[in-house]
Every structure is written in structure tokens, then in C-alpha cells.
Image 1: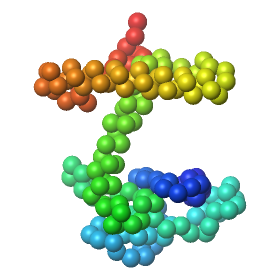
Image 2: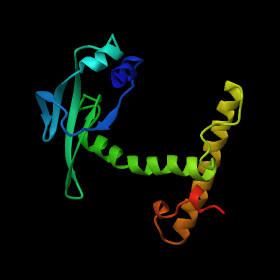
Image 3: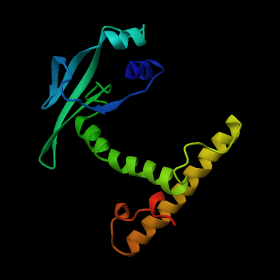
Image 4: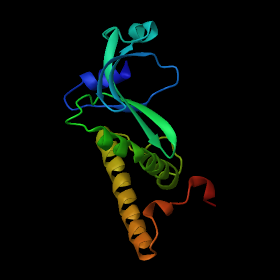
Length: 165
């Protein structure tokens, strides 16, 4: 339901998620090698929660081997000419670095605090932008340091909240 709502909320809104084990789908047609258009049936529970949810939805199923392991993903990016499978798979492979970045922001910069201090929407917005700016400036310096050491910038991490004294 959430994915359908996201996609229906405007133009150029797409999603990409790993395929859960046991997900039932029906293949509509092949878009290429290990690239299929599929129909997913929405559950009665989801339709109860989101009354506007259609009984089925179309998605694109991509299969690839990554480090010897088969990875399957579902996406709303169904046009293979506009969204080549190789580009989607490459983008998805960078997802873990993005997740680690979010963790660094939450644990290192925000000290594991669950709330922002600001009280107005404008100040929350400003606080979030300030946090993102600080994070990107720190990561930029870390990337420069990694370059000077001939190391990967991904190998340099901020200390986590648990390592603080």
C-alpha cells in the first residue's frame, strides 16, 4: 500500500526494494535476460488499511548475481529503455553505503538522539540542513584524507555513539 501511495503521489516517484522470500507474483512478460514485468496481488489486509489500493499492481523484477549470490529486486521503474537494468543494479549496490551514511549521521553527529531540538517546522528544516551540511563537509575531508593515504573513502568511518566517552 505504501509503495502504491508513494508512486501515485506524483510524477517521477519510484521505489526499489529487495524481493522478500515467499512473495507471490505472476510473470507478465520478459524485458530481457533476468528482467521481467510481474503482477503482484495485494493482500486483503493491505486493501483494508489502504481502501484505494488496487487488487494488483505491476512491478519490474530484476535478478542478478552479486558476489556469487543471487539478488532479486522489485521496482516501479518499468521502462527498460529509460531505466536500464544494469543502471538500477549498480545504483542498488550503492544502497549500503547510503545506509551507513544515515547511521553515521544518527550515531555520530546526532549522538543517537531520537528527536531534534527545534520547535518550529522552519527550525527543524534548518537543523536538518545544518546536520546534512556538517556531515557532507566532514565526509569531504575524510575523502581527501583517504585519497592522500591511497585508501578507499568508504574505509574511513566516523566514530559511533557507542565509542564516545
